[in-house]
Image 1 (cartoon, rainbow, N blue to C red):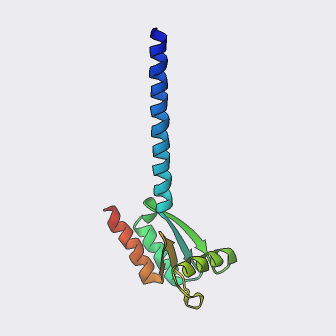
Image 2: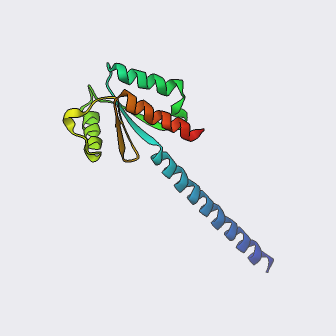
Image 3: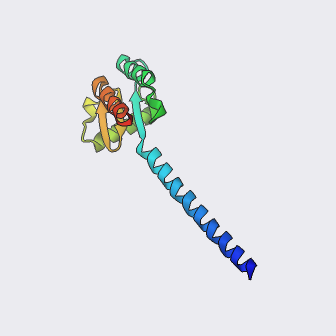
Length: 125
């Protein structure tokens, strides 16, 4: 009789542990994808360097998953940037770097991109 109680307790405990791990896993993955930021830049772009310096100075990489993608020598990254731009209603002729795609929105140019990152700093304070 005692063994049946122990088995029931162990099974109940195992179910709770599995449920907690599953919930934490889902929460962790959704936060990570929500916080992913695609940062498109050009190797020789001075405005991109200024944004990169802003990111470094404010330790933004600690709170956001920033994925840097160089576009001047990587056609795949350029095509990806163009795809994001189209989804945001931007024309291919007017695209420039720095360019950020995050949470279904696009930000283009040093001022707009820096402003985007500044808003992320303010959200964490």
